[in-house]
Amino acid sequence: MPSAVRTTLVLLSVTVSAALTWVAWLGWESGYRRLPDGRVEGPYSPAQVVACAATLIAIVVLGCLAVRCATGPAGAVVACATAGFAFAWGRDAAAADETGLWGVGLLLLVVGCSVGGTAVAVVTALASRWMRRFRP
Image (tube, rainbow, N blue to C red; front, side):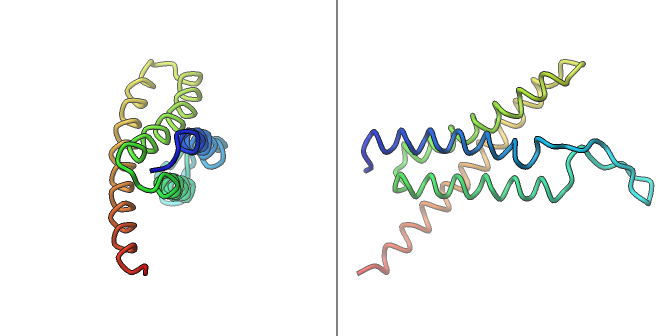
């Protein structure tokens, strides 16, 4: 089990990294685009969303490994990643929304990030335990 100071630093790093992930990948949206076939796409391109998701997965995996996949701290890693990303998204969405529906979007984002992050943490813990079997 990692020390309390180490765990705190990991959780703080995960929170800040998740917020910066939104800023880096999705904070520079270019608006909606009309595709040649007439469909409308946006405000984010598929590549932005995939890169953002891959970055969040990496953050959760590294955070879980840093706290040695202990159950409590791994759950806190998921919560911090979700909180950091949701804060960054929510701040932008609340400022730009005229309908008041940004709160619904925030709720859906938190649920999705929590479920996805938990799945990543569980797979990371299982893979870590499996890999430890082969260490001398």
